[in-house]
Length: 130
Length: 98
Image (cartoon, rainbow over all chains, first blue to last red):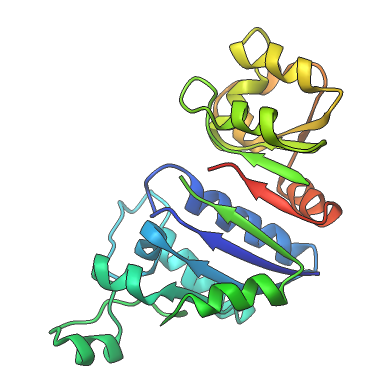
């Protein structure tokens, strides 16, 4: 079965990022497919590579990047939510005249159409948020 | 439909909204939502009253993380993340009451 996951909450806020990660791992462990993980609203903060949590804490951002690399996941960050919160890739940096980028590996910035498409293509869409 | 509630009934009205509005189906309590399934809590009576309309589930790891796994009320089935995935697959649609 094809799953899509929508994450609307930032990391280290309440529990949505952690719940979504554990759920995604369980989906893959069951042999299902993850069509896409979409990060929206404060959820886009899951995609900054500049976080430095304490060494004995989980690194939520790196954990997503690793999961995406291992399972070839499509992790999409909403462009408008990302611009508001300073989540920037090279294309956005050029377009908006920014002097740095911070998008973590495994993520890509795109539009809400990607969320709609995930809703159409996936058999199930599960939302995690605040 | 599978209804997912992630906030305590002491914090938000999302469980009440779900109980009032949702069609018969299942409710899965996760994150702080699991507090509703604690024996002797304010949420217990509301869930018991709705037990004829909804199958009730709570995420065991979230109850354990809060030290209340041994205080789960009767009528609620504790599941793990694999069970969470199975529930989502079992029902055609799911709704997170955020």
